Length: 104
Image (cartoon, rainbow, N blue to C red; front, side, top):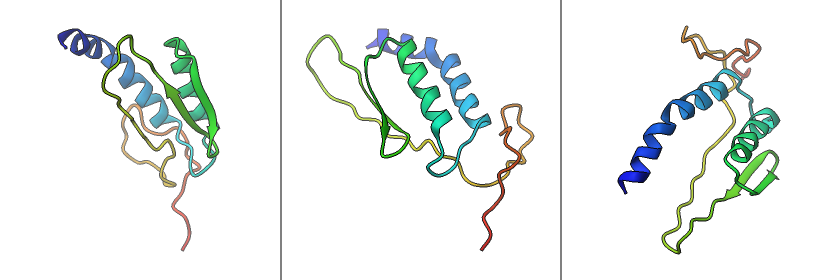
């Protein structure tokens, strides 16, 4: 188990960069083609072959198989952003200034 923990710690800086990239380039609703492509590219870089794109629009599923039979883990995440302008001043803040709150 410590091997898994060490590998996860080593991946952390790269995962933070990926999260920040997605945060800086938000897409709303069902218009998430860029986010889909980013996710698929990262999965392919990790040599994951069983990737399905276009699931219910721009969704992605991937099957990652281990070497031994054992427990199964499922992970789900939304990839669309809130339709609002970000005003945090963070270095990884959204670069999409066009986003505004929807009119009532």
